[in-house]
Length: 123
Image (cartoon, rainbow, N blue to C red):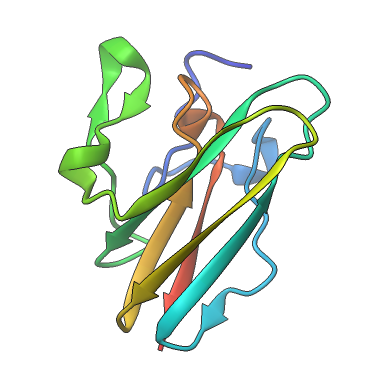
């Protein structure tokens, strides 16, 4: 992992160089109850998945606490999460989402800035 990576959401980075990622199976989902089935496919690292609303997925940057190497979840509008999952483990989260854009990301220190985020559109 690169502690100096700047691959967080809304940053001008070459995401093909990202060392981590969140892969979503659907980038567009209907409004209402949305269930996130999350699996940590890593063989060694603990991960989590947090959901926050975003205005524009191409321009929004999430509030970042540099000295902690993580997103400020409360300031970002934390809606829910699948807490820390050990390698190979799974969990789920169901939220009632309104139309708009949402970011999903791992907030284990350094993971977000190393590219571990994705966006979805709810319509």
